[in-house]
Image 1 (cartoon, rainbow, N blue to C red):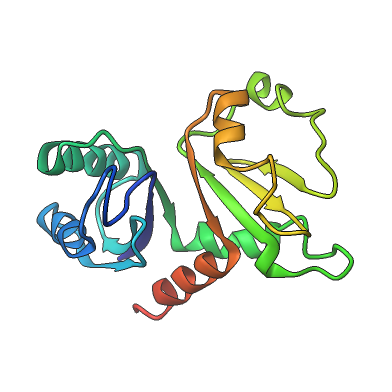
Image 2: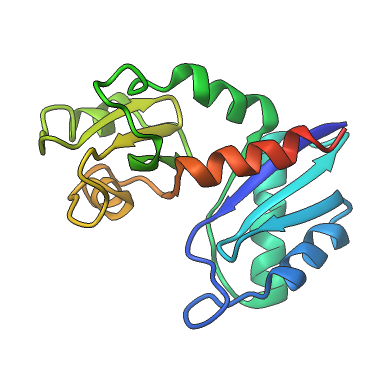
Length: 182
């Protein structure tokens, strides 16, 4: 049985794209996924499935959310192993005085093309840093995220990608939930 995590872009409890997490969990269960569990109010769902492939899962979740809730919401699916690999791939842990509270990852819907990556390759907003690795953009903002220019909307606008960001603490917590399932 494979454990997955879905990261939904732009989902919350109130306002725009409002979905109650209990209803979101129920939607995952209705699709036949096992033991769907949400974490915080932003569309993080940890679930299991023995049969499906990642692209098919993402498409199925997006269609169900549209049919059930009326929202067109991009869904980024990652396996438990992919989340585990983030920790060894993190390019910023060697930074002087590294503080994981100043780290985030943007999970992209699709892997960016070389042309998309080139659009941001020479952009620099020190002391903030980013690195694109596969379908993730690692962000490190030593002074915090309050004034950074490099977050999800920046990359979506510059590169023409779709993604959603999560801070390092949230990623670690979601991974812990996924690891404690089986």
